[in-house]
Length: 378
Image (cartoon, rainbow, N blue to C red; front, side, top):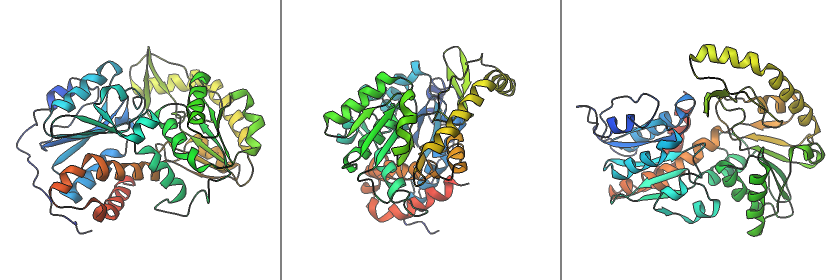
């Protein structure tokens, strides 16, 4: 594909000045690249699963942006320091934010746009030329595009009006989903469930206060409501790939379905292979119970129901596999991940630099979307 803009030369003369201080704050090894600009993805372990680095790298090449995009595994105690480093680094363009920090970064940025303030969660932070950090949320727009206008297939949902939606989760991704969906559910209902029911109730109350049709539903009531649900959305991390750091060690969430209770054990950190074997042995009964309950619940959903999992790694989660086995339409978070990244890149993190070079972000949007989609699948 021909680039719509001329590429910039990348300086490979040596490590950039931000590399050493950033490496001291994150737990994953960073490559010593010589690009002038810095962008990346902040989370607790994005280096284990994120597609964003390859997508943004392809977009940077297409747009002629001299920058590197890195996954950043950030311990909770280093979150503020990482953002302060971004603020102080002249070559920083900004960062994206993933679990579990989408709500935690809200008080750490200088300004929130209207959407992020309404949602109460941030997944995109842009650094201005004068060092201010601007928080935005592109997850809501990405979810709607994935459901209604996926770039690689027909709509998953013909219309949201009148739908009953079960939203699993109450964190930053779930908040974005709730605020994206609620205005379109005229005559429908948004049911929020979460392992911490106080958080589910708080999210449902916030949506109701804004005029949305939301209510919290605990796990014990799911069997009763599922026969009337047309759309299930998993916005939790149950089912996500990679070793997950926890207080006291590591755990795994990938073996579990989001549609049933799970109690994954936390084992001491160590050799990854030995840990995985020990985890699967200790968690076998819990995983089996989770699968049995999930499969039974999938059969309670009406035949026309859609199960959408915001997780994109693995490509097919346990939740999706159980839905498919029950004859239900299902999709993972691939196109949402692409759509929110295109929005984050062109409407926020790279917008100022592109406009300064006379590039219309709207004009290059189709090419950037294609480039990111191609890179996602590699």
